[in-house]
Length: 274
Image (cartoon, rainbow, N blue to C red; front, side, top):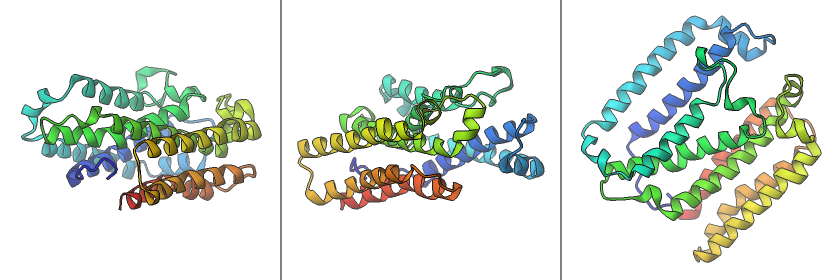
């Protein structure tokens, strides 16, 4: 919407959804099967529903392959017309995603990007922005050979804006696992610096800086006032959430409010375009 590009086919979004569910379910299922020291509610659910999980995973795997075949059928001649740099960037995003969990692949041992608590939210934000802000544009370039929108300046500015926004949300989401991460010696931002310093020295300045950077860009591009206002709402909500995070919240708060800010950002961005 913000790049003034038409939406991709429904198959593209179904593929993104299916592969996301397949990936996360596989990661949690593998974790549950490896007899973890701490059995939480999620692990117990996976252990008691193994048969259903395995069947759904097989179904999703088949669906992903089928969607890939349907989407790419007839587009093979266009592959060579895409700038090689765009393919490299897409591979980097996917590689970071695949390398996130240390227990995702049996032969990987104890290696995984998630094990570094300080870069963990940055990796989540990077992969999310890559899949949502870059891959749809690359598929558009593939569908309409001759275009090179995936390497345009505005595409990358939107990607960086989403990367920072989601990384901040990921830092906030680590607050719910503060005690568990500390026990497992996973040095997330909140474990390393404490709740107060993480909020007021890191997350809040990042949020304000990000919003200020958007305002400067909006003024440079001569955006109209209502577009600037609607795109500023998610930042205002983010800053408000930061100020309310000093007290411990329920898991529903983290799921509905923090994750919900991603949806709020999308809605405000779309409204701003009108």
